[in-house]
Length: 297
Image (cartoon, rainbow, N blue to C red; front, side, top):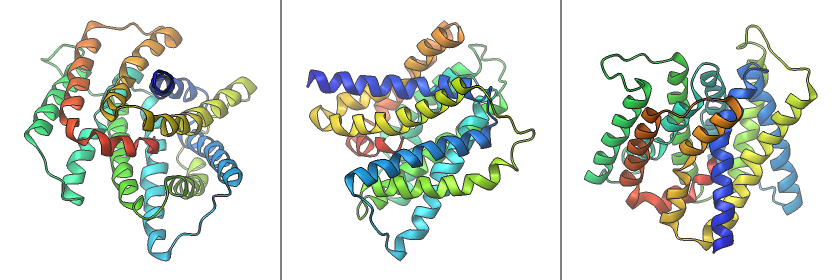
């Protein structure tokens, strides 16, 4: 069990670091092109994994539209808005906003899956909103200035919540690897024309180190870390694993300090405590469902 916690912590460190990795990558690649390239490497990894496991399955016609919608919203728009947002948004603030995804997922589940909204969820949501407001205003509660990049990060958060709901619905009849593979293929195909129309001007690095960094982070963050999480989550208590996943904003703070020399402020720490505390409180009764869908990251 100790070994399982170690590998789960490594996954959280990788996912939390992704905000800083994205911030670095958008300096050298334009967002839509970066989305295209990252999805390319992710799809190649998934095809390699499916080939190794001999795990190619045909989809029913009734599921094609759902997979297509998942690929458009949960993969392409989710990835593209993430990189667009990180052009100007602070990676730590972005991580804190995305940490509230389980709360949005809970409200969407109440609408589409008829799950109940509890007092605990509403209380936790209020705490999280207070924390976000505190972080975005930098502690100056009399003025509110929202970076336009944060709006795109909110889009990322909403699309991620939609992806979790759709994955939960589809997973009753399709295995996770098949869902992930085909939805990412849809997202990749869709990203091809947009890579050359959305970005003006088109930016692409000619430095091999940047390309290696792009390829490595795509495979590690969306491939290896997900596999590690899925392989070890069954060996530990679900509630403790859920708390681990909520540590991503703190990882983003530390990695941002190390790689970007971004100072960690008291406002960010206080806001983080409100947000993470609110998420833990609101999702306390939903932790098992959330852990089953964490592989969508």
